[in-house]
Image 1: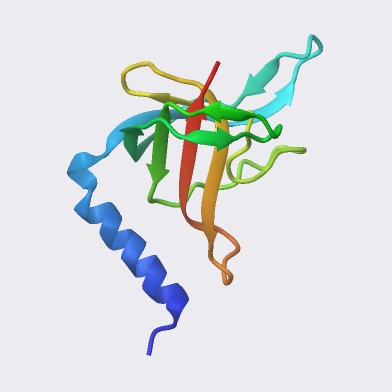
Image 2: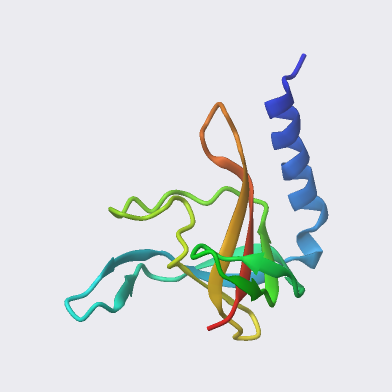
Length: 131
């Protein structure tokens, strides 16, 4: 009999398959460091499939400020760790997401249901807003 972790993993995979035609492409760039001027340095962009919603929510960001989000990006496939020192994995608040219409914004929050066996997320929900 499958454990709950297996059921959740299978359910997320099924949701990914069933929503395939609803998913949009997003560009993702992982923050890797800062240069000598303090500007962020990013890894090369990768293209991901995700459910993208234009949705306003009042979100408390990583700095404790309440900000209205503009978009929700739901990633239903695993996102590998970047491995750069000093970052939260697999999604750091300094990372960049750009949706297909060119909209981007800072990452306000990331929600992840963690797999206790692999220590990776089953899925990630990223809320964007502000500049």
